[in-house]
Image 1 (cartoon, rainbow, N blue to C red):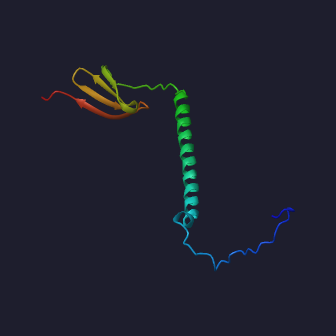
Image 2: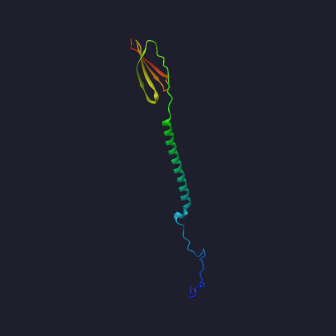
Image 3: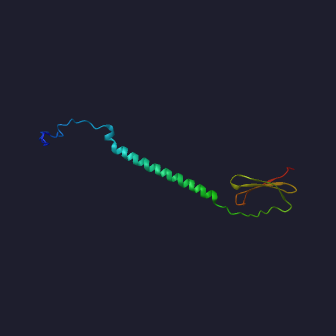
Length: 125
């Protein structure tokens, strides 16, 4: 600018693309689209994992609070027999020892009270 605050015309030219030095773009610039895609994919995976975690925690909390109905089952044992022992196994299975005058029996019951297996134990003669 001169003393009168007038702008002097300057002879400046914009360099043409052929005049600019052609440098290869850096690796970051070349792979920018790939980096963006990977960031979006990772964000989606993180959100999906959080949803799975929240749903799992919710389902476990609601399953723990559910009240199970009381089951009643009748088990008919042979006449002149008595139950001498019973034990509870995994997943509600039960083992019952029934004794009569000549032998013992092992009855394996499932969680519903149905007989799965009967084993008779008697002395050899």
